[in-house]
Structure formats: C-alpha cells, structure tokens
Image (cartoon, rainbow, N blue to C red; front, side, top):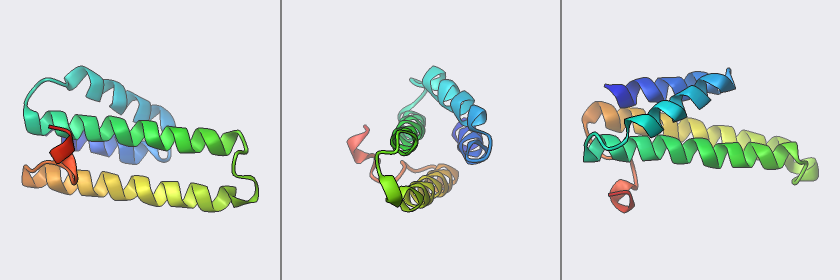
Length: 102
C-alpha cells in the first residue's frame, strides 16, 4: 500500500516537484520493511535521481538544441517507470528488472 502511495507522489511530482522530493524522502525512510517493498522503494529512488540528473543536465544546457527531445524522452521514461512500478505493486510483484535489486 505504501509503495502505491509513493508512486502517486512521484506522478504528482511531475507537476509539483516538491511532492516528488517528499515521496523520495519517504521511500528512503521506509526501506527495510520487506523485500518486495524494498525493491519498489529502490525503484522509486532510482527513478527520481536519474530523472533529476537528466533535468539537471538540461538546466545546464548540456544538450543545446536537443533540450526539448531530452525533456520529452525523460518525461516518457519517468511516466513509464511510474506506471510499471504501480502496476507491479498492485500485483504484489517486484518492479520490472528488480532481480538486480534483491
């Protein structure tokens, strides 16, 4: 249940970034509950930091004229990870590719 709420935080965080930060802090605090939840929390944390890194590079103008495409690609990637994680949390499974997490 907690993982689903945190995925919701991440989804709302696409519009209000402070909410995503609150979700990541909650994911850090909630680790060590059980293996499936820990995999979801780690998935949320990695999604946040990789997305933040991409948006940070865009803010530094690292991609020049390709900024729009990088932002759109990052948004699609983040939304895909949020939806995939939420669905697998509803099914009670590990997030996709989480075999490496455990």
